[in-house]
Image 1: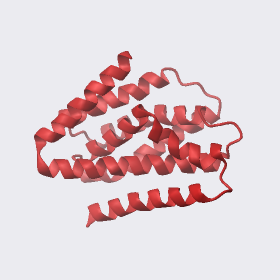
Image 2: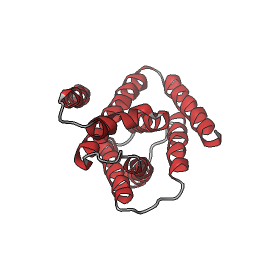
Image 3: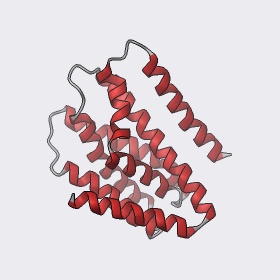
Image 4: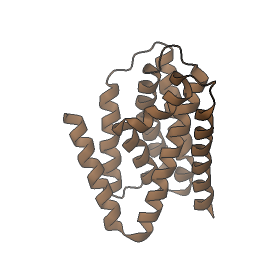
Length: 191
């Protein structure tokens, strides 16, 4: 029942985004840009999906809190960017999040909520800062924020759905996904 509710939430977010994009009042640089930014960057897409995937095997509290940690970190990072605060190593932090999430998945690592939650927030601060920095000029801040928040949650829940289905099927498949993410993260780090 819980998985069904989460999948329905992800579907509702995607439906809401499609509806919002259909309205002519949203500038190209507002909601649509915010929505597309996490989906068009491989590093963003993989990190958010990987964190969702990884969260499935965590404690019930960590698993349930992960979407809030993800969005909280994203908003904090964007707020820092919008406030004019520079964050060194943003691209490195983003690619590192893919690498570490892959390692955690491959190792089937379970972390205490305080450690796992802090890690997720820290990673998402880098992603959020990049989103905030790359907001198109003239875009409505609230629309852009709603766009990337919607996409972020949808990607995270999609990762959770995949993680839940593979976790029930085969630990070897889970480790394979983690190894693949680790390889991509390593490639992105040196590329």
